[in-house]
Image 1 (cartoon, rainbow, N blue to C red):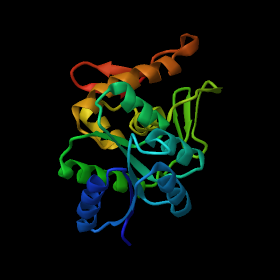
Image 2: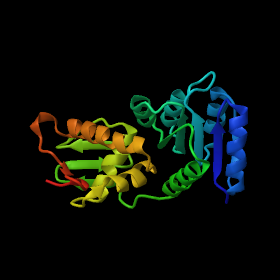
Image 3: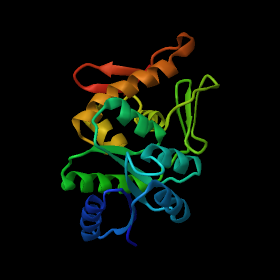
Image 4: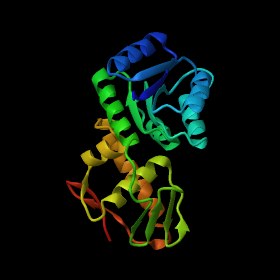
Length: 225
């Protein structure tokens, strides 16, 4: 069965280019030119992947992501923006986007990210609850606890911590994290890893708790006591 992709983009010329390229790759593609139309159809049809512009009419890209996630839509989402501002990138990922790409970009790069996100969409986690030391991650309820205290995490923080807990005591390089958590090897994502590691540590280390995510100089990070 063909994977279903929604393109939500107000530039008709740009959207048509995306549709042609994606269709040639064998995907079933639908196109919408404003946020409201895209949101309603995504809610009703629940596609496999959504590519949407950050700035679109009626409902912004960020608001669409937030509304879809609140409704339980689990489609992979790639957010397109014309700015490389890290704060904008973080807002998109925190809202629930799975990936972020900045214009102008090579179509080959977008197609590679689409393939990577769809592979992850088809992957099922074998263990619903992950544990390490006094840290517990419930993948079904999307809850993180340390010593029974509930720790609120953004969507991206949850996915990053999950990856660490799936590979405890193992050094994870920045390249591995980019590919397997972000599906992205760009310089922007490389910079933002440090932002999310800092945020995770801050949340996990309240009440003078020990550090679990360690930095391995020159290599990456490791989940270790």
